[in-house]
Image (cartoon, rainbow, N blue to C red; front, side, top):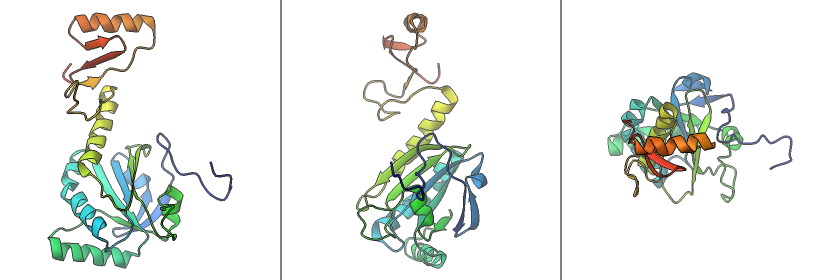
Length: 226
């Protein structure tokens, strides 16, 4: 942990996203207040007019309807000025017939530094990582991803994470590896582990009744339909 009192700690999973006002291609936004009631994907990219970032923005836009169907908005960020973002959007529209519809934060470096988006090995203060923050409708950080500059993001995985978090919120269950295509349980979800003897016995009974599938009292799973 950094001991410099002048440097704020970056927000962590489960913490409230820090309140801030940002300049974007869609005007000034207040985070997270302007997105209260919605999920939000806030993602940084190293720079405008760079090859991998261009492919990512096209992919984010092509998946935008999928995110919106989950009540989830998108917001990009890099240490570039608004005019650079706008010109890059125009270039993407001209060359790939894709119009970027979500806002992009024009950062001076202050926002990226506050959120821990600066690449430690970048060699200068304007080199941001490919970071992803997933915020819930209350403005809490629910997931954080960091990618190296040479590796573009997997949009299917980010969508899966939003879906999984929403399933957890609604049903209070956990999700197995590669859900909903887990190698052991398919699309089943994991029932939270028993925390006392009575619940452990109840799990076995409910498993025998067909409500759960229990490999043991501590590992029960079920269909979302049950």
